[in-house]
Image 1: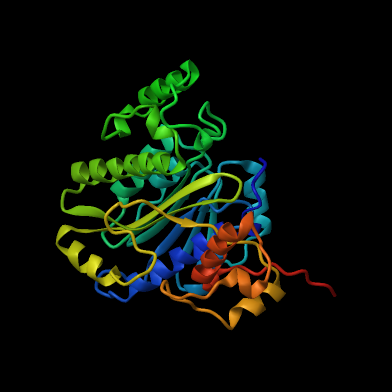
Image 2: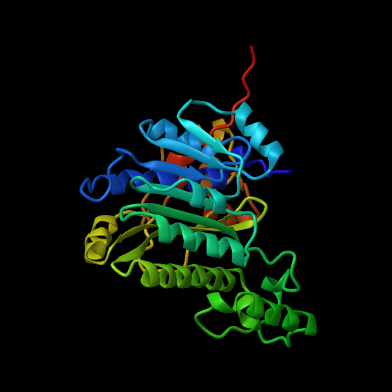
Length: 333
């Protein structure tokens, strides 16, 4: 199986660190979440990057990776970095049946497709976990291979083509069980509209699954972001919690800068590629606050994107996420 270079993706790396921060913050509420007996499970990919990060920050956690592709599974065995990680060469659905939870769990469902099976699998995870468990889902939200590709530069008032209308109808038929409102071609004309649509579909699953199976529990969203490392991805994380604890959780996360507590539009992650010299030049001016008049493009004295405005936009992203910015270095012996 051909995999994207997960270990070299800047925005993906930031997304991983946001999950680490979420776990750290939640762990401050020790009566709700503590590391003892917690198991982390993900679709780890060939290099197990997210599991490495979890192990670095939370070495006491038990780790599990689920992988159905045999060659990817063999690559994971090569990259296995600790005896505490268990690699399962089975579908996630089989893992959920075979491995019954003993205590709180953390799941990161990082999918390569947006389809009904993956949304239903997300629902199965919600149904199985104990209160205090964290569940994160990441799914593609890209229109580049659809009739709406390039629609961001078109006029919203333009008459949709037959191909576009057919695509919308097929989408409605395919995802009818996950839609909470009526949609038309307008939901596909802008990236942010499509992201809101898919996020609402995830929200429907959280409400439907827990209300039907565990009426005393709710999924409280804690963060929601999107990024593009070749494909636009939507990443949503939250905690399964008792209804009476929701207000306490919201209060606890109120001052977290990456919070999304009410299913508002997801936050963009779009960090630029910077050299070590550029980072060192910017470092003494960081952190910056929203009200600052510091222009990072002028500090560099050149643009790193298309024009000064776009350069300043991505540099402010770097300023916001610099704590989580990965470093890829060549090592020679």
